[in-house]
Length: 220
Image 1: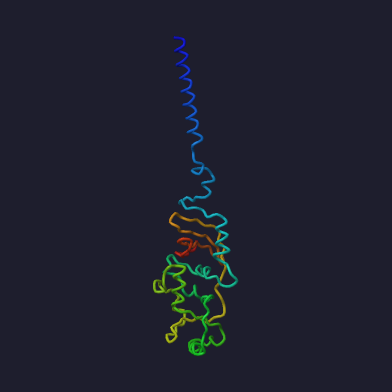
Image 2: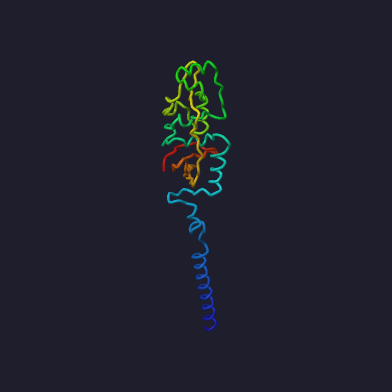
């Protein structure tokens, strides 16, 4: 009997030891550190969007926007406010034309423009065509000019005989922007907070296989 008592007591002690050890491990060591703690909260907003790291913000500031010595057309997509791309202001967007595509102005065109605006004799003439507009909008927004509400288009001079739009001026509306912060949703929508000409805004981009389409640009 003493032998059996010692045998069962030893088994009980072993069972209690294993039970307590298992309880401690489950309570302290099995939690995924990425599920809680300040490290996880720093990268997720209240809406569940992921905060973009500083390196990505720097890339948007220096490589995507503001890059190059001349007019960066991505900056021009921030020149007006629109809740949908259909309401983008084409006058503001193409105020400087498309620098990568410079079209020559013939004497016949210039003489015709002078009849509409004498300033065409001594100011710069910006020329743009609908195919140019369509190509640009397709690349950055996935739409054509006819898909928009053509806001601001009436501020161009349209010459039917040349099927082209013209602006006459010697100034610019180009401005650099400063991307302050940003988030990305699971659907691939990127919201960038920025400052430009003293104005605060939020531009929404859609990430499509590493390319970006402009969705909206609103005042913050």
